[in-house]
Length: 360
Length: 258
Image 1 (cartoon, each protein chain N blue to C red):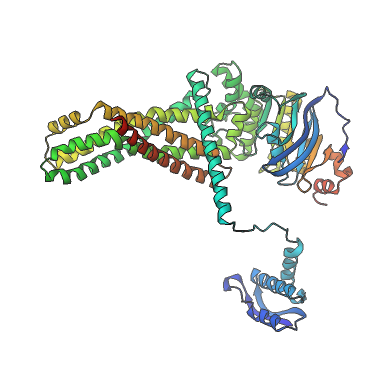
Image 2: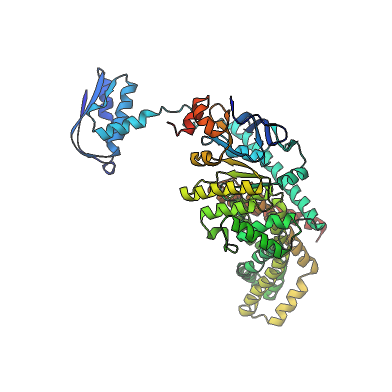
């Protein structure tokens, strides 16, 4: 059988379908296939691809192929493509594993992940112990930079978020409390909510998205760039040199940011109380001071410290676990934020229960 | 397996030895039964096709990976069996330059070179600056002390990495693909620099590379890792192996497939 091809064979015109050729093979009797291309006006890879498909069809049907009729360039390209035999096993097999196998595998993975996290916590604790004994090695300038990054640089976003949270709390409270003519208790509501819960929580979430992600991205790209290898071979522990200043900075700054967030949140509440509900500023202040106990305040600050540890740990852990490619750094960053937020919310739930039992 | 030229090394001039080393990722064996000796003052080439485990071998030799089996010896002492502290002491006499440069991106070049000096010497900050400037000058980076790694070209990053590797006057220098991504002239200059440093520091040099020009220009001993058989299939002087290697794969590699 001879395939007579004509016209322009360019990829931009698409590829012809093979049904006619396949039909001819199915009808049987085709022993040999050849090409006549005298009428082809122009060609590119479209022609080569088509010829290759025909050749493969022919091979499947046990027919011979004569490439002699193809333009010389196309013939050479085709020969080049067939020159190296397909490596067996090179094609990735997309074998779908049974549900139980996948379940088992992810259970094993989860266990390995938990072990890895625990040993990381252990290593960080050891590094922290060395720091307390004054033996940890890192650059003071790094710690300074990190303090700035986790502290001063975070103020604008913490301001915005906690001001808005204060406003929202006041709004929600005002609608309900005004029905009882008890609008002034908005001060109590905002004060207690901010100091006990929201100040620490919102700061933690902002820092998870901002700083935890940055930690993971920094450490991950250092890994890609072999900077961590370079530290190791120099006998410098990356945990002390890179992780410790980041952990320290965030743990120092979180309580301070939390106090700041409490204040700004209360200010936000006051804006609604004074501006919309016509509570006198002095009365608002007095109510706030009376409502908020030291237990609320220090409980919140304590929570913030714990959240700080969790956010810094997640960021550094995911960063150090990162793979050696650009996409792995992206994955590490995402994982850092997810881990941090999950841990913070779980810890917050745990605190609620424990504080309730202790009657705080 | 064959052993060609230089004469069998004696215990005195043996510097590094890899003994019966098997490297594996989990259950996947990358290379097995590696066995070779590097003499003092050698420029030793670890060569082989892409993906055969050259860089991984280097990582095993500096403790970034643990062998599945076998040992690495530094001056007759087992590095593999050594404690972490002892390993760090041994590594203090070792300089490594990485494929990607591995310079600490948050530090200037002078600070990069200064880190090992600050860690392991009692020099004052001023003295460290002086020594760092000298090391940078040695690799042709005079005046670049205050640049950050991202502000200089790839070839310069490689050289800055070298300056950091030689900060503590190491006895052994490892290079991971030093000329990858360099133009022929920079690559040649780097070869010259490696020779100079070997001669003047008296160091032993190990280079992972597949650049034939470099292999013949500076290598005097080598090991050839094969991806298919997962072990080494030749060792000896590459110039000798070029024509006399028993294994045709090695001759083919060293003659650019010709």
